[in-house]
Length: 123
Image (tube, rainbow, N blue to C red; front, side, top):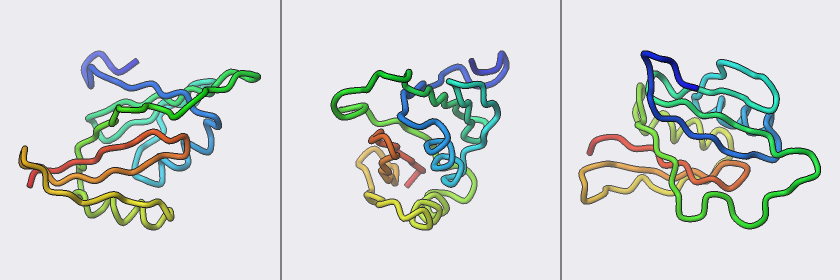
């Protein structure tokens, strides 16, 4: 997971419907690099690997996903405004942009499974 020379960290998220989630992430600008059920590997530029993992048939995750966790990404090419435009085109609510005291401009977007995605850029 993750290439030997590329990113070191990655995130795996259990999702109810891998294809639905992958389409959502691709519309935000993620690139699908591999699909081997139950995994779908996505990349956010050269800076992040995301693995969507289909919840096993017959099992269900209880409660809110990722409660208290923000999955963070640097906005990348086009900046935060490009991410906002793609999210709005998807019909997804965008929380922000907010200027933070740590000198970033940030938004929050919630994915179809309830995970909170935090996109940031320098302010």
